[in-house]
Image: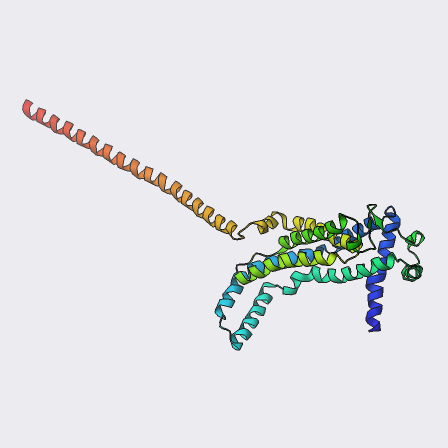
Length: 319
């Protein structure tokens, strides 16, 4: 257990504490701005994971019809069917290059960051002299922010980033949980893959509301600095997701996620009908033209035959 504690301290805690103190030294001695800039840096470093998550989500969306077909094939609840369904599902994932865990990569990466930042904020802004002594041991000798100790914890003149959100002044004690929950809902909505399976749609709908509400309630007992981190992490994540997925994310905000596909099919069918009409109409005109030409040619032959017969009769009379 000691080795895990040492790894946690050296890999997570000390780099975070030194990063926050370093940014505090260069960013106008504002701990709130230090947390925001730290958040942006973390999210930028996680862009490859975000791109991979988006790619995995698109692949999952592509193989959903095949997944549904497998579920229909083995819908009888027997041990043999469960085993076959599991095997064929894993084979389908392998064939498509999909990892179900890959869609949750950024969430798994951020959980240690949230826990580490929770501890880092407490240790970086200690309320007691003993805490300041512990902080000096954790700082690197080359860190220029050592001269800024102790750090100021007040942000926007009203929010003490070391205190709990519930202890913040009105309206921040209510606004921060609501903003954290709202930004997480928007992030969830953007990254949720539409599904044709009713059970999966119900699960997605439940997760869409459960996670934001849960984190909004938890934020009430978080330090205000951690709430600022989660809020701006969601905001930066929304911006990054927009640039990665473009206008495709707007499809997730439609009431029926399959109405767009239906409209596309209808429009394609209408375009095919229009094209067929354009093709058949000229042909009908050509046929009508040919019929009119044959009729005119027939009338001309009748007239020439009449003229020739009348000429022959005149010659016969003269003779």
